[in-house]
Image 1 (cartoon, protein in one colour):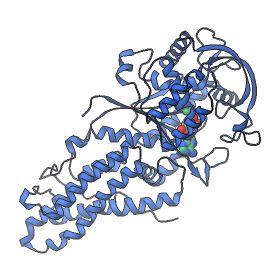
Image 2 (image 1 turned 90 degrees about the vertical axis):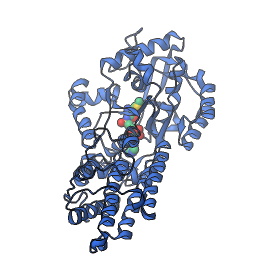
Image 3 (image 1 turned 180 degrees about the horizontal axis):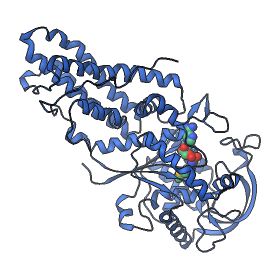
Image 4 (image 1 turned 30 degrees about the horizontal axis):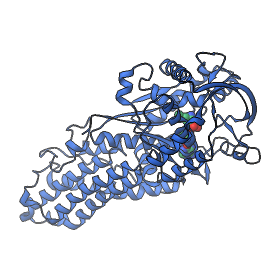
Length: 514
Ligand code: MSP
């Protein structure tokens, strides 16, 4: 067990509108990984937050006749409420308008200036407000930015520039010699682009003032993306708590969407290189969640609130569906039908039925009392096989998480659920129950099944924290559950004999098509 903190981040979201399931997708994935690492006994720091500066926020507020702060304070509770509804276990939530962040951003940019990597120049270009970034003509389609379907604005102003071009060779070497950018296709994409050339980056604006002032020239505000990327270090004490910063940085994993690859794999490492700071270990870019074949968008009315899904299916089922059904990496479509199918097949049938059957039999045949665990000589080939399946599932789940493939991790966990179902059929406890001579055999089989439920709940806990706790409650199992973990609890025969089992209502009642 390592004492080193596993530091994991989501992008910080623009709170210009309400959160939708595209945002939830990234945050659920981060939560699944964070909880799995905790389950392994690791110390974890899971960070999320909101990106609150920039022209876009200022304009939205103006349109509503509010100050940016009023606008933000009104919308922020909605973001936090969504993460609560989805049981997101973040350890910190950073807002870029907090003093701890603003101070540290000013300190970072001052340090960048002190290295000689910042100079004053003039920028002429096309600025997309949706991306909060300048666009080159070849990035536009019919004069519009395809990412946000907006016509960029022509801008000409004096800006400070960061000598990004200086870092081209070092960046190329980084992509060629490390696995920092994943998946592979994204690494090749960014490598190809950087090979084509790298221009210096404009890092300040004078046309509006909703941002962190440039310390040596406060009529400029710091470019929102430089400000935003720094959240990953300011949140853990850069510029305010050096000892903490040294203990937590570098990040083990930045989870991002593919639209913000350039910022995270070119600009961010170069900023860190400029100050000789360690680089994040891994940046993983996932694809889009599509609705009716398109990236979800408020303006196209394809935006879906996570609350709608949670209200219909519960948070665990939504988390499970996103992690199991939408492979990480490429684009994938969301559909209500797929969610319902996944729910009915995996949760109502495979898992829900197993839990009901086993608890039912425990009530019926054992008066709801957990029997003595089997002695070594009471374990047969079928039990051995079931036990081995659990250990293999944990190993494969771990490999799935290590390679940022949540769907593989859950697929592996499900092999154990299926195996437990097959074991029920094979040993047919209802036939043993008819024969008084088989009493101890029946107890052994039901103990193995009850203990399997405990272990199934352990493997599924990172994906479904609520129902797995409910399974433990029904098993009368309370030991160490504040911090369930594999090293302590991932062994057989830990369910205490004599505990009282309760059947309870179906965990996942079937959903019929409406
Ligand atoms: N504020 C910046 C990120 C700064 S990180 C230092 C930003 N915010 S965003 O709210 O527009 O997007 C945040 C993340 O949500 C991005 O990774 C983006 O890819 C993701 N998604 C937004 N819509 C999405 C889908 N439809 N599907 C999957 N992810 C989506 O960019």
